[in-house]
Amino acid sequence: MSEILLQVEALSTHLPLEEGLLKAVDGISFTISRGQTMGLVGESGCGKSMTVNTIMRLAPNFAQIEGEVTYYPAEGEPINITALDPYGPEIRDIRGGEIAMIFQEPMTSFSPLHTIGNQITEAIRLHRTQDRKEATKIAIDLLQRVGMSNPAQRMNEYPHQLSGGMRQRAMIAMALSCEPSLLIADEPTTALDVTVQAQVLQLMRDLQSEFGMSILYITHDLGVIARMVQVVAVMYLGRIVEFTDVDSLFYDAKHPYTKALIQSIPKIGRKSRDRLESIHGAVPVPINRPPGCGFYPRCSAAIDGLCNRVDPPLAQIEDDHAVACFVYPEVLDAVGETMPEGATHAL
Image (cartoon, rainbow, N blue to C red; front, top):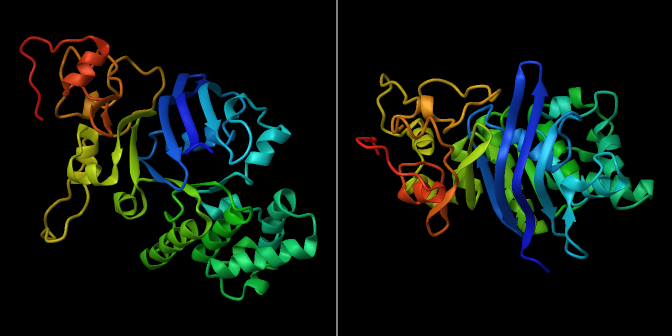
């Protein structure tokens, strides 16, 4: 059995719009091993959600998808997910059964016309058992395990009758109902208060240990990343700009964007009147994107004549640490470029 569970190779998701070609995901690659927790971080609009929607074959019908997403099941041959019909039986067997997803906002992810129990048992009857009583028993047990109060009563309630934390727990229960090998969590704690957020995060850690599943955790909260994951991919404008383990990310960040994200975290001991650090500007819309590094207009270490002309590839600069920035000679060597004469940078 392969140690690799999911392999993403040169994945691109481009959306042709009237304004031009929007490159939501632009040639990213990564692997997730069995039992591993990986984080995908970046500001809003960097392509994190579109990446996982493409993996789950939930991208818009008009999206132009290139590259490969290969899933390695416990038994059988590897499956190229990108080659499957998004409405076919093969992807329906994988989606929910082998790879499950906790969506960003459960209030809009649940159907308002059906009870929580009806929606959870639907997935169970599709992937595990056709017996209605057994499916109901499994659903009640799952709701109890995720900390839902009065699980039998909640089965007959609608999403609007539950609080935010309860809806999130119900969403986790539905995602885990078929014991998936990979759980994709798309900012599952964004709409929750701090206390409930901590409970949900601890719940996910406990359930991961129990089920032995892998988790792809998507968030812009670096505090959550520090607590939850083992390896991290930092995304900016549809591309991965840094990939490393979680300790190296916080103690030895390489990319100027990653450093800026970490510097913007509120720190204990800072005076209340001091302004928080921020990243100049905003993430541009990736329509008809010009050549060069996407972070160039906001970067304090930008090199004129190079960063605004050549796309920096993701290159290995240390063991298990890859970065896409021309500040490092390994990245220059990867594209056969040389530092412009007289160029300086701030790093």
